Length: 408
Image (cartoon, rainbow, N blue to C red; front, side):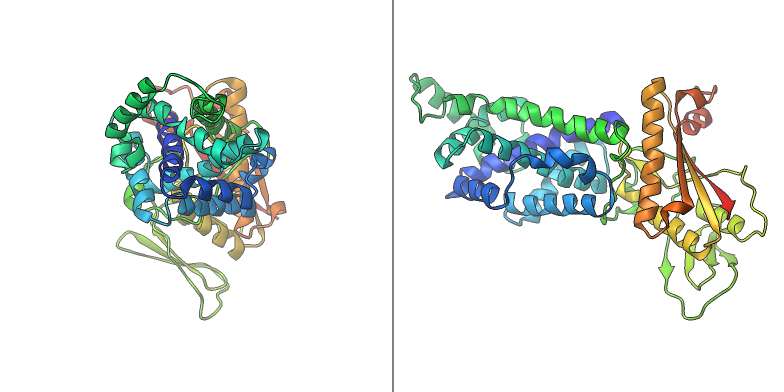
């Protein structure tokens, strides 16, 4: 749900900024952060091309990789620190680990970009930047839930350090140009507020249908089958397809299918093999693709497709099904497909979101090797919603992605 994603972001943002503050109090920590910002040319320019960065494909892969590198720097390549954040956020927000990891990697460049913009626009030197980081402590300690930083082992932001900071502030009564109470330190809380606002705006809104290019995020990261619970399920079952792809030894000209213990073993033209749940979305599409005559009126609903709540960002758990769909389309080059996404809510916003979700699937399949001209995408919002909103079937029907086949 959208609330879960928002809750995750509001924990991830202070965790990232808190990690920077905690790193800054270490020996030469502030200098290393300052040098990292300068050397990596982090100046806020990421916001000039954010739609491209979140548009899927190589640009998004690059943003995820950039975020991963930044996290390694902030936490000194300690996976335990990053895993601690993921554990804390997933427990409190109720999203899957894969989704949390993706959000963490996507959000870190935004936070660093805002800080880099501040360094550049205010022409901060190391001393002023140290004051700036120190100025975040009090706000972070008050804004985060009790014990939040203790659980992350951020010693400079722990409950004990908060009491020490209060004592120091009581003793400090005079401001000097170089002190931590200068303008630069006092505007620190506004940076966090800006991070929260921009992070939510760009990740929750911009990727949810504000511009045609801001559509999907595909991650190389796989989620465990047991944690595929994030976002809206575009289908009617929790029994997700398990997909295995094997390389062919010999070619095949037609689809061969057999079922063993509820698993459909499908040998596609060209020799690739898919193992999926019998009767699942992929199984049905494969069967129909092999027919000489294709019924363009028949819709096949994705049953293992998820988005991060309230957005058009594709959850990493959906990647296996998208990969399988791409393999099927590559095995049947004479087929084109139409993609139809459905949402409900405000008439304009629901249609925009639905269009972005359909485009997200289209762009993901293109990224997986399916030619653009073989794919069409269309979104339907409140105007096409079901009347049976009080039933589980009606609710599911209003949040789904359908696919239909067309012969060339």
